[in-house]
Image 1 (tube, helix red, strand yellow):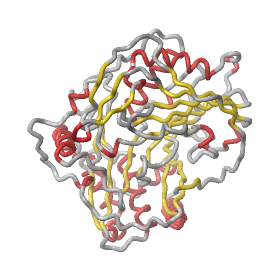
Image 2: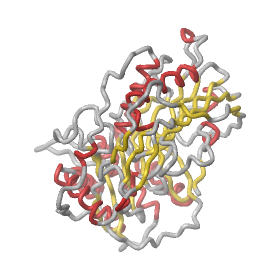
Image 3: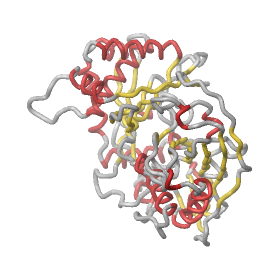
Image 4: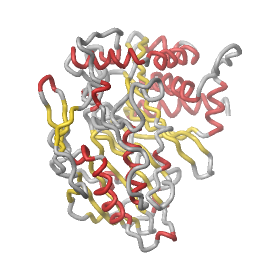
Length: 444
């Protein structure tokens, strides 16, 4: 169990309408569509919560965001009709979508709270989030359940909160953002999405015959010897321009090659601080997994593809070695993880899924990082302008709480930065905060 660890402590009442199913506005193909062998791995079999907070916009007075969204959703599902279907599981645990147009769950609600009461900075964990994204009984599963749940909650200030729970087997972060952009375009009177959705999941299927050509440490069979009795807490951290500049200065300057990226130095910095805070035995293995997307690396998937198109190459080291060495050691491991994500590596992962029965990632003493800064969640405008916060609602992917996101965000001062949600045991969280402060204070 994980609980919020946040200075914001507010209580409010949410009045929800009865959940209803929204089907495509027009007839759609009745067919069965297989997912790819990247889509249907165990690691993708979870529901991802996302949330967007929109302030009041005077020019939109008289427009009900819930009704605008509900109408646009039905029209968007005509183009993204697999979302309105249900997952089935076949031989070898192969997943497929029964495109039966049963629909997605939609909830409209009202809350007696204003946007400013959620505090500054507006970042995860959000108080009473379970009220803003209601878990409808019977909808929590992956198989034979709705693939999408949306709740639009009107606030007393005139703003609203858009929250969604999305079955990750259908789409990765970029695919989800593509779908939401289409929804936003249609909400603003477009007749069709500007980017036509592309299925083509066969492009990321295993080869025939399948062959594993890499050592995939992220799928190692490792005994889970972690203690589960800890109280886990959620917290998030904002790294603004001053903090990011200070972190860059902690790493050696490269005079003869490309400079270290913000992703690389921030990942190395947090991973090392996090590992120190966990106080592991020095010989224990720790893993870093950097989510790497195939889009842009090749023509393997076409524009408009909204399936999962990423892998998690893992690097492994001993906890003591990571904590004892300089930050430069962690940086080299981050760069190694990024460099591993070639097209051949992705092919090898798809083959591994078929050969090994679609295993899950190693969660024990692992930290996974997914950079969603370029997914475009903040650019999703339903007519009320840009969201004050937009993106994943918390750390973790399903039961794997050791996953974080790099989310673009602007703080109350108007400074652009990165929000990183993290989940740790309570004692480790306190040590992690202290470690961050000690390292940053000396550089700021």
